[in-house]
Length: 416
Ligand code: FAD
Ligand code: PYC
Image 1 (cartoon, rainbow, N blue to C red):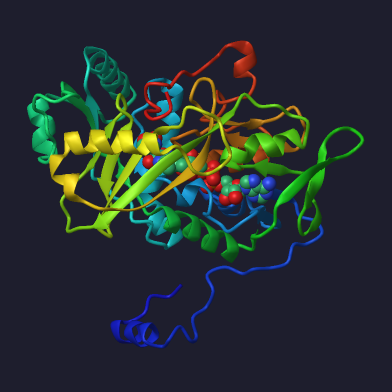
Image 2 (image 1 turned 45 degrees about the vertical axis):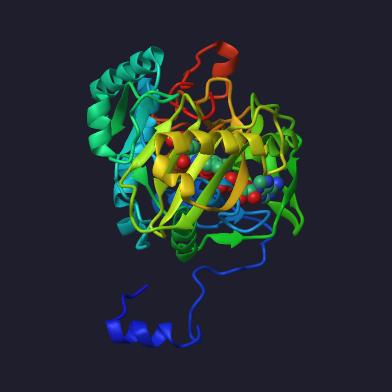
């Protein structure tokens, strides 16, 4: 899109939306494509974009059962960080942070990436030991992370109550390159850029079956808008991945749980960073609109209901009010839930599957937004070349059979 002069922009803004162009087309599905992506979240749209821009596969479509970004991409609290413990994870998540750092320029779409710092609080001796281990491991891997005393934590986030409270703050791990981004903009930015390269984005198109040929390889999908043929299919459907993969006879080591968040009424800028407390399952930041964005832990029971138990959010709010007493008087505006797909080791699966031509990107659980560009980038590589990118090579399905787990329960924060 060409930039407008100030006057032209004002004229368009006051035009009652006349003459505005749509940001992406809304084509009917074709009978056949070279590749299909199932799931129009950030990971699926991003994969389509990189397939087209880096692998020159442009006869492709993204199939979304609802509206793009209507899944977890549009429901998450947008925390971005790469302070994971193991080498494999640090490399993958930091690849994503480096892509975040130039994503607005690459897509020519402001995703509002803001590196305001993510601070993770330690409330117990165990927390402190675990976080210090992360700090050391991260620094060996070239990922920034530093240990703060309670006084330094308070200096970084002055509203923090480090006093004699139920959840005493014994210190904190701070990743200054961590931060937040605007979740919808990520979906829209990738969608617009992919569309411009010829990718068909097809909303209101639910995949209901996966077709396989006589030799077992994929040959297409059944959808609510008819049969669509393709020799390569990438599934990036978050909490509903198990449902779709079962259509191809594949059972995955995933459990789907509701994860909830809520926002307050908007207030002036008061909160300069992101604060997470894994032990008490509560975290907080302030959006550019002024709302305090607050999240809770996963529900205790698996479910596909897209809403969770009230006691889970009220526990998170109690903890937030104790850590930040001035927020006691804020009114909450709305709450919601998303369905997150959790693996036994809290690490994702980005891989080929036993079915030729079928690829899967899932298991991000409570923490996949931060990985969006990196995940999409290596998933596109995997689909285009039928082999993993070196960064996602360890994140196979077979690791659960072979015992080569990448246990990131401590780093995954709200899903352990
Ligand atoms: P989604 O955005 O969910 O996209 C999958 C799409 O697949 C959906 O749009 C869905 O409609 C579609 N689909 C499903 N079934 C079908 C079908 N049969 N046919 C066609 N389409 C289908 N992560 C972080 O890193 N930081 C955070 O702060 C954070 N906070 C979170 C807070 C909450 C409340 C929640 C719920 C999640 C949070 N996450 C966070 C996790 C993060 O949102 C997800 O890991 C990430 O957004 C997953 O992206 P995705 O593109 O894979 O999935
Ligand atoms: O993965 O950082 C994270 C996260 C924070 C809140 C939900 N997930």
